[in-house]
Image (cartoon, helix red, strand yellow):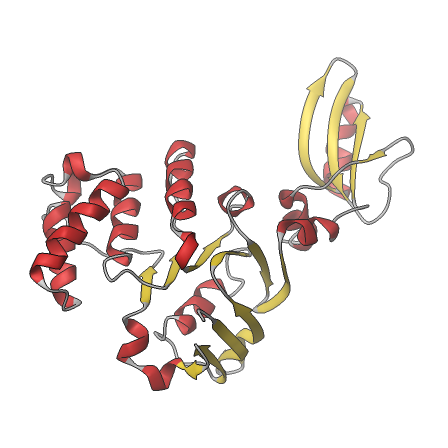
Length: 288
């Protein structure tokens, strides 16, 4: 059974606690790790990948600690770090073949796999162009291709859409969605829309701790009764933004329509609204 388990995983740097006692179990599907910058997401992912050793706790794959599995674990792992390193003078095809050789993938198999992946990430038409000519979106797609060279059962993606335009984010999101049937995919981001439509489970992380984990429906319940809509005069808008968490603002003929995330009704006449995942995020990270 494909299973990744975290048992009280903690990482300390001196007196600073970057990740604090995270426990959860993941099976097949996409797990969206949501948190503000500095919440400990990257540190947690590096421990899952075995790059960092946990100060306390254990990461287990199939019931065995990943430290004891060693190379057997690395063979089932694919990783796209936030700062993806590449050789700008290499072509896309040459770069993937080079990494395949480092992963000890037989030449014939590597050539077949590289062509298959270039097609999947929509780079086959420019396989012979140097990477230095690629856009940011092309480079991120090349990054996911290299992470898939060994056909991993666990795919870890750290802020994979950072810096991409909306079209490239959607394209990248669709590629990830198509890969989840036989894998555990962990996608770390602070961009809510990256995971809202494709994640099977959401993990909310704040200050190094796991606040909550569940499907979208369960997450939305956390904000139900805390989202309000109201119309105020233009002269009042700044005051409401100063006192409340305003998730959206729109000018209308009747005034300025505000969507506010608050534990209490912000004003007389405000109407409760159905929450979305962005409201949940704003509710938990409002002071940040």
